[in-house]
Length: 358
Ligand code: MRU
Image (cartoon, rainbow, N blue to C red):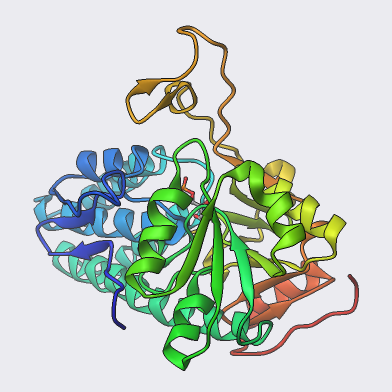
């Protein structure tokens, strides 16, 4: 589709990563030839968004596998495991990072020799990307079933095409609406401290010709009360088995406002983001990042030197505040433990799992 570029590209001996820290001013591509470079790109948010960091890590393992020279499958597997652990230490919250690498390592474990292991890793990593594109498209279609032509939605951070293989999760309905000739518009929260909303969501939606209006995070309640917002729709980094959801810091506040104002609050999540091994939101590790991200905007200091800072990158929205979770296989409402487990385990396609409850 027009106006949507892929932010991660596999080139066999390297991974090309669109440096999202340079957007919207520059379109700069990083050439990552080593696991170290991929890990640093993830840590520094050059590649970001749960599905995109999973893909980058999977491709990083494939680039490594092509270079690592040993005749011994056991040595290869042991070293692969170390590389996976090293990449896994880049960011803790988004489960897609671990999910994608587990898939690639699982594929390698089916090999009978090192050559076959390399092939299986590469194939699996490419498949993850291909699959993510169709997953995001399906999420967009399900999300559109909850919206109407002419609606305005409010979002935070960037859960768009550049955070996934294509289309995004929360932004997928906006991209698909454009294809259908619908007029959906978006209000994008700027998303302090790193301004993913201001820098990335505005840029991505403008590229796609979608009507987008930028607000600061503090303007969300007023905007939701006065601008006829049909729904809040956000992405997520991990959905716990009970439906609690971790997403960019500020998301929980939007859910509380939405509840108070009677506006639906939707979480758009591929099933790769649903982690049945994490029982509740309290079990999701929340990344804390450098104080510099809060005390500075770009490189400019905006607070007194040495100010105490708390900088959690994510918050958890309890399931009770979520109107529905939109996955590629259906929309889950109400009884999240049952609905999520059913979708995750039985592989139904396009089933609408609307369970009684909220
Ligand atoms: O710190 P970031 O920019 O990686 O945070 C990303 C988000 O919070 C997104 O909403 C989430 O990863 C979903 S991306 C489809």
